[in-house]
Length: 299
Image 1 (cartoon, rainbow, N blue to C red):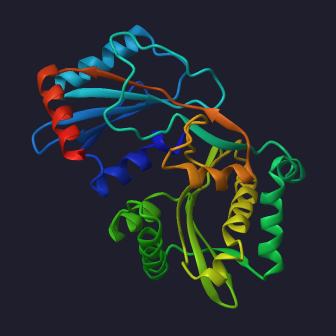
Image 2 (image 1 turned 90 degrees about the vertical axis):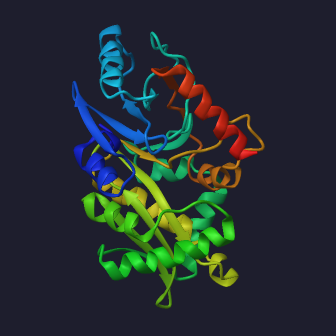
């Protein structure tokens, strides 16, 4: 079971305005999302290995009933072959939520085995952080702590140029999900990194991060100790998999995820293809028009 296929996750998405509504069909949650003010689409994260024709027809029926533009399926499977086909759907996506590849750690290994499989630089940087007196702890999800995290994240996004959500989203995210946790790294009482993790019995996930731009503190390698601490916490939850959540496609040297991937692969070289995307269009002309307008906007 993935956190993304739980009722608490769906309620969090609705409360934070990420989705307009959600439905439950044969124990699978389906999200209703906006394309425009008047048009909607359906998204479903499929955790099984195969989609039967009966399942697909149920999805199409719901799409037609809700008068949605299209429905998108994304598969997610850490253990089985994702090279599947879906009848009536074509392999494509409107908006990608799950990248095709991710880096993971098998948490059924011992801590010694996990460390041994890291790149030497990963193990070395964990030791550097410890040697430089970096400490990591889990903190309460208070308004004050979430605001401190948010302020540090604004600093991070200004430095690294990526998108972020508003403060209310992070409050809702952390307070709606009981297994969402804030971990901070500090040295000499100075907070130098705050990260958000999901810890769960099946899959634990490294989710959001924020860190100082101060070069002196950045050289203390706090992110490596933060990850190592989170990995050990995930083991305490009896998680089977620790997911670093998104890495670049192995042969894509120009990916915008390249620098993040470099960091993650120092901690785990276990890269897996976990997701494919499929689309069924219910209103073909409108769908083509909206996708064309999106392309023009991006230019």
